[in-house]
Length: 458
Image (cartoon, rainbow, N blue to C red; front, side, top):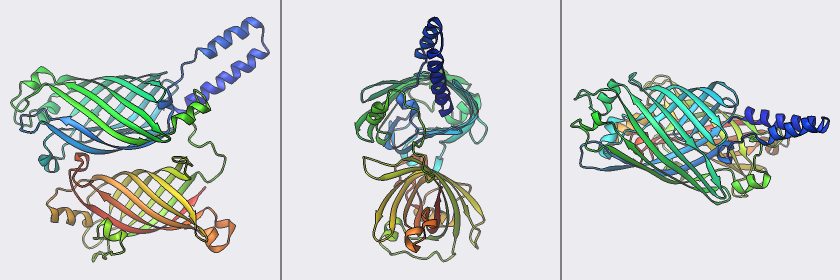
């Protein structure tokens, strides 16, 4: 349920209560009954943010020696009135009301194959399509029509239920996947054997347990049943695929949410201050040095002087983490990599969550670190050459990190008019998490840019 829906529900309840005071007894009774009958979402559905990391295990259905494969996955959760990011799926609202949504939608499609084949194959990816979603209290149902980059079509329908009790959250789900003949022929017949379209069934449960403050334990267990025609292909040796996930995550403290009331209004920021958003403009220079070398001040200069310019927007999610004065911001960004003698102009998109810790040594200083995802329209020269040296096929989608240190310009120059302006240095980092993630092409290494920036809060 979206923010507007909850605001509408809250406003309606207040209006009913006010009307009941000035109305006859029978009208008062009817309206109070209507107000009490409203169906609210769970706390989990009302949450606006989260950041997690964990290990996914998947069964390999193909006729190969390996039976399982493991991945490290970073997961981001964020939602507002316009779009949502929820782990390995995201969408932008084309239309919505309290119970219904039509979304431009993307979802990551896993293809579980042996680890040593994943870098060359890179067959799994974010696919795009349209989604219809229905929400009613703790129930959620959706249907989507998707296609991969080569227009191989498929779709799915999904139903899930959100249940919470104390520190536990559980969500059982069931899915039907409709797959076209060309989809099955490519992904299951491996373009060697003819395959017809079919329907695959998946079901499972996701779980979350509140450990302490903002720290949660995450888990998932699911099973998929491949249709009979596909199981009979020479490339496949099992009908059932088991999937599991285990990890840790940072989310809003559920104890604080319970103390504030059973169904708090899910506003991103309860503050009335005008500094809960920011714009950051940065310019940076590539370096062939790895992250450890940069952090130990042993940076080498890129001989081709490759450069980037970026613009990041941030909206504050919370002012505290583990009761410490650590601010979290959801921060998407657009990056332009300038042309040089070894590469043309290319674009990069980033989505991340960034933490800031402020301290004073004379003026105010801030340390920042961000975790997220980065996608480039074409692989940069600084990244491509490293992948070539290591024998990897490069991946456009990689893990994103940003490390920063900035100083408040109002404090620095003794000018209150500059109190919301920060001058800083940051490291713009893309990498594949040491070959541990097939989502990033199972590569090691990446690229680094050192940047200087101005960040203005408003």
